[in-house]
Amino acid sequence: MSELTTRYQLLADLLASSPVLAIALTLGAFLAGSWLFRRLGQPIWSPPVLLAAVLLSLALVVLAVDFRDYRNGAQWLTVLLGPATVALGVPLYQQMHHIRALWRPILITLPIAATMAAVYAIVIARLLGASPEVLASLAPKSVTAPIAIGITEQLGGSVSLMMGGLLITGVVATLFVEFIARRLAIRDDRILGFALGINGHAIGTAKAFEISPTAGAFASLGMGLTGVFTALILPVAFRL
Amino acid sequence: MVMLRGFLVLTAFFVIGEALRVMLALPISGGVLGMILLTLLLMVRGSISDSLANASQALISVLVLLIMPGVVGVFFQADQFASEWLAIALALLAGTFLSVLTTLWVMQRAVAGRPKAGTGE
Image (cartoon, rainbow over all chains, first blue to last red; front, side, top):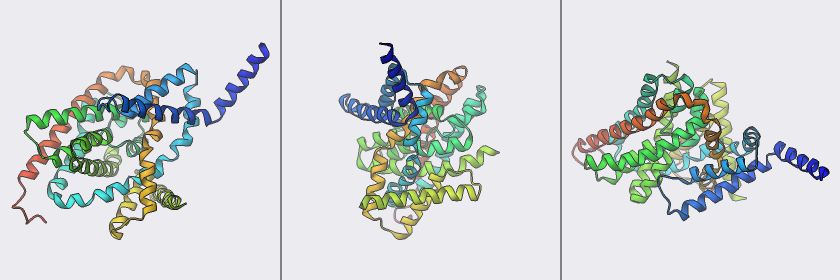
């Protein structure tokens, strides 16, 4: 019996030092989260990434996997994040022709909206006494995740806090766009889509595709342009 | 095999982006620099190869998988920021409300205020 315990300890040590368990758990949670998302009828308030993250956290707790061991192993996955960020250039290029249809409003709105999305959050958090690390983590809250990770690392924020803020921002931005658009009597799918993409990144864009393909296209464009604009401006502005 | 060519292009642009970031001491991540270069190149060329389109589609479809390790950290490191929860919550909720309001208001004005159709092309 005690020999079995020793062997089990050996196995636990082996799995803790190898990335394979972390990768298997992440893959499993990703697939289970996607499945659950479809089963729940694709709710906007609970995107697949949130479901998958909750399942993964539960699995880590139940299996008594140390979070640092998990994070070290999962780094093998996050290596792909760089090329995946580059890949976002392809849909951006494919949506670029929509700029032609509405270039003036887009060029006026984008810099103001993308800048204010960061400024509002930073000013409110700073007035309430948040630390520089928290400010750096909240600043890219409207930017799509792979780009936002790069921004937060450049600014010296916490990637985990930024990710949590990103999820909340995506969900509430989607709700606010519906609410405010009704008040302002805005029914133009292009405006709704663009606002969803600028403020709600991938979560808002998913909602926009539910409204119409046009709204979805403008959301993709808004998300891509916001990512590029914020990534170029924020690290420079933050130093001042 | 065909898709691997697309992966090679994406990886190469990431390496170029990282090289630019380090050599020019830019405060922008290598992924974003590579993405901007790729977008500009595609705009100049005006077309995209199937292998690149497929490879980027494949990577984007598993983006959630790649960001999950970061998301999970929220549940394990949240207590680190517990004392600042009010500032964080208000910045997220009120900040997002204001930015959505600003976006919709500015965009509505900009669309309505457009000069007569046709002159804007």
